[in-house]
Structure formats: structure tokens, C-alpha cells
Length: 134
Image 1 (spheres, rainbow, N blue to C red):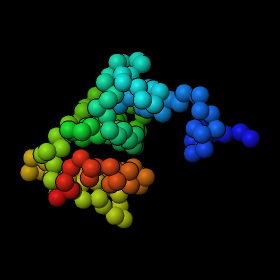
Image 2: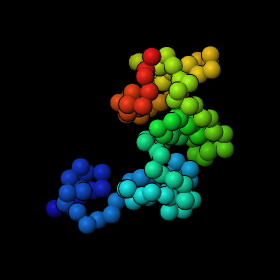
Image 3: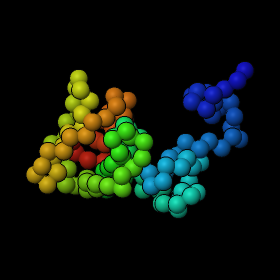
């Protein structure tokens, strides 16, 4: 029987195998699960709660902030623009439907972030653990 790394039974079938599933938000390199720092850029990975790769940006959730790493028009490279939204300054959160848009107020301005459906579901599940959605 063969297993693929994305197969949920893969971890159980190969208990001694080290999986590189933890993506560094800073440089994009895969690190072993449970890593404290990135193998390449040495970013502290203990603060990253969630990292989502999307079409127009990458989104990192820490215990204190939502960090948006902007990408170029084609979504192939980061532009260098980074937006940091402290969680204690975010309010009026909405998860758009049927169009997948993550919306929130920050400094009296409405922010709208398009997300893939699967990323929207993950964010919708995890974010309320760190911020009051209202």
C-alpha cells in the first residue's frame, strides 16, 4: 500500500517520517512541523497561528495581528507590500457569501480581502479564537 503526504492516514502509516508542512510566512519555505524557526530565514514560527496562500496575497494570522503579504497581478511573486492589522483594532467582521470576501473595519475604513473558498472556511474557523467577530 502506498501513501501520499496529503492522505490523512499518511502520518499514522509513517510515524518516523518528518513532514515539511509548516510554510514560513516570510520566505515561503516548507519547514518540519513543530519548528521554532524557519530553516532558511530564521523567522520565529512560534507566533504564526495560521498561514494561508491565496491568489493575490498570502495571509498570516498571529495571536496579535493579521498580516497581509501582497502579490503581483499574476499572483506569482510578492510585491514587498505588507499590511499589518492588529487584532485589537479590527471590528465588524463579515465572511462574504456567495462571493468569498473577508470584510472588516480597521481605523474607520472597510477592508475587503478576496479569499478562495477553502481559505475562507479555515479563517472563519480559526479567527474567532483570537478576536471577537463583532
